[in-house]
Image 1 (cartoon, rainbow, N blue to C red):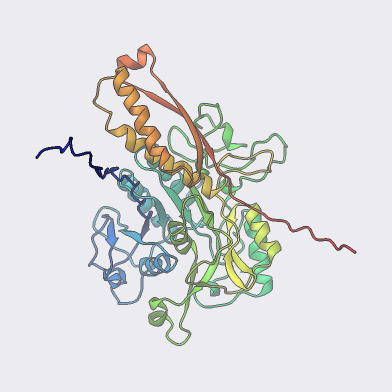
Image 2 (tube, rainbow, N blue to C red):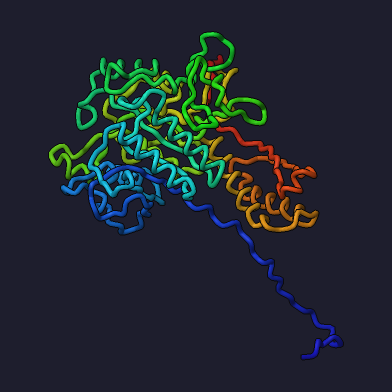
Length: 454
């Protein structure tokens, strides 16, 4: 066809800009790890709960809801879209309707090793509590979970753990209501990191707030990474010879990879009609529900000061009690402005004061960091096998920049990084990406100052 160049016409050209939008990030996957004696689900193999999935397959063999059935409904009710379930065993094919804390710890040790290279975002060991009794000396569910999440983040995909705490009284575990005295005793016990007089046990390894000597090192805290992956001992545990240090020569704090939801809530899911048809509700620790809420909340928005969907208050904490527990790094909900809301959202990282604390005490900070880690890992993965030359290094920088650009405005403000490649590293085929991130901090308090004028 001629171009009609001699006609003096006005041409029209439509330019395709090649629309390229960043794909929406998938909702985080919540992995629930627990037990059931039902023979329908596979053992030790994560099962994804899809729309229409038969949740009742995870009921007990007797037909009543298991701890997993309840946790699934609690996480779903709070907003989790992607849920996986892992049924515990000891490798022999044994299935359990319930577990002692010691047997659960041993089964979780096996599960965490199997799941280390499984892609997951949130990990909830159902039925495990920070103050569990009956465990061997210098072992704890908190160290076990923190170690798994730290190792998984370091070696495969970034992940974050959720742990519960024991109930104020035995009656509260089912349908009972604690008295004001019961509730106060429970709050004081958690603040002292010792619920042994109630239903739990002393758990000094979680005490990241006590610093009697004023040297800026928590006296009892033991959620430090160790070379032998065992809980460090000593006073302070940070001085244990096996404790690993980061590039700034600080002990690596694994508490930043998990949180503890200490509150007990009332739930009215389908399980309640089976368990307590007259009352229409059952009670449980809110850890699975809080994990579901976090999964439904963007990484740059704190899962706090909003209702915990599906949960109802049993007996309300006072603002003072909730604040005391938050100071000790426990997450709880309480009634505020007529709604039952999550009071605060912090990690389990050590936090003595505003002057002495980890950099990673906020869930938002850690989630944005984990999103950046996953973006960097995804960008860099395709370069492993290529020549370590200028062209590929520049292409790697571009790919990392593009990945971080997807997070810009979603909690990540600025970033800077350098590629480190010494002659020795080039010989070994290694590159180091040294990254600095500037993250948007969440609004934690708003003060209204009022006055009158005449």
